[in-house]
Image 1: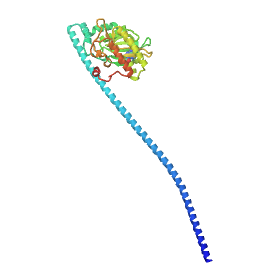
Image 2 (image 1 turned 180 degrees about the vertical axis):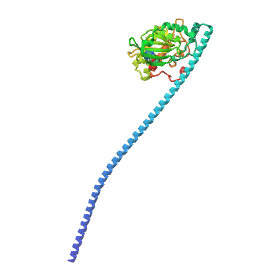
Image 3 (image 1 turned 30 degrees about the vertical axis):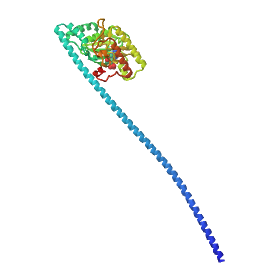
Length: 384
Ligand code: 3AM
């Protein structure tokens, strides 16, 4: 019996141990499950954070890139401005150099003329002096290159007299300051200034070019008036009248309300069709001048004027040359360097074709915005 009880006890304790260990196993499994659940939740959280972190990192990287790009852009703009500044400085220096050269040339020419005048005065004939001055224009070289550096500064009283007499016969006698009102300065050139004014009687707008005879010779002013007065054409600015006022000629002409071609080319690139039209109109003007034995000698965009009605006209005849059957070629070196034909630069005999060359340079101005070598010194341009 005792044995049976012991066996039963053993069986019971075995069963108890088995149940205990099964329960422990269950508890462990349950704990594991709970832990796994927590772990999964935590892991999900960690993954979520990881994603957010990555996003923040990407945003940061993008911002850094933007910042770098902006810095690079800023640097680029700074570099570009610096380059433009250097270029502007270089151009200014080139212009300064050209200005200095032109001034020196002008002084030399003035000296030549004074000497020529002195010689003629010694001969005792004022008329002879004027003739000699005119012929020395063709003989002496180099001559001035810009209208502002005109080759004939005012001659002495004696040699000016015949020219002034002729001028007085040509100009009007009324008071231009009464006839024209509302004067406004348009611009200045080496010769003097150009004003816009209104004819009081009609309200018509006119341009009045004041030619200072101290700077532009009397002969040149007279020549300019006579050529404009006699050679009328749809492609040449219309001359109206002129006055002699306080040592200056006031040349009254039609007002071209579109301004100069130079202004247009400096502001925008022209369409091919517009370039072709300007060329055609200028060529018509030149054909007319050449058929009338006149060489303009200073064709450039500054001397081509535009009207809002589409008109294109040649202006500024201060440097023109008149040909004759006995003199079909000229030699004097006048004009503006970058527009001058090679034969003219070299001081060789030349004819009307020099104007055609200059118009070719105007074509380049219209296509590219400026004439070739325009920022180089005159001496350099002549070598090219
Ligand atoms: O300096 P800008 O280009 O503004 O165009 C000529 C230049 O102006 C203008 O006068 C200035 C000095 O030469 N000009 C000359 N003749 C003219 C005219 N007949 C004229 N403007 C209008 N009509």
